[in-house]
Picture 1 (cartoon, helix red, strand yellow):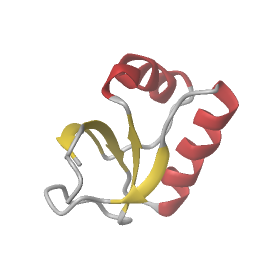
Picture 2 (cartoon, helix red, strand yellow):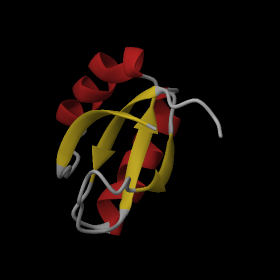
Picture 3 (cartoon, helix red, strand yellow):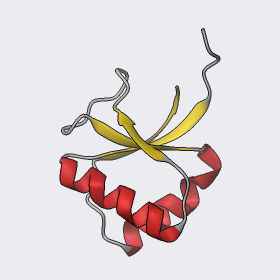
Picture 4 (tube, one colour):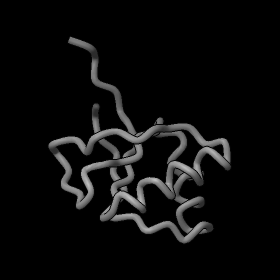
Length: 78
């Protein structure tokens, strides 16, 4: 079994919101990828953005700057 690591997770109410986050992160050169939402978190669309915890500040700024529609921001072990 692989070792769990801390991740910064952004959840979305809609798939459109998740795809907008993916596009904005790619355009800004920020790390992460879309994954299924962990069982410990609930989210409307079932997808979330997972990134290293040290990217949290940059990702939060991106969400505000791009006015992205997010459901929640979490730090979890995955």
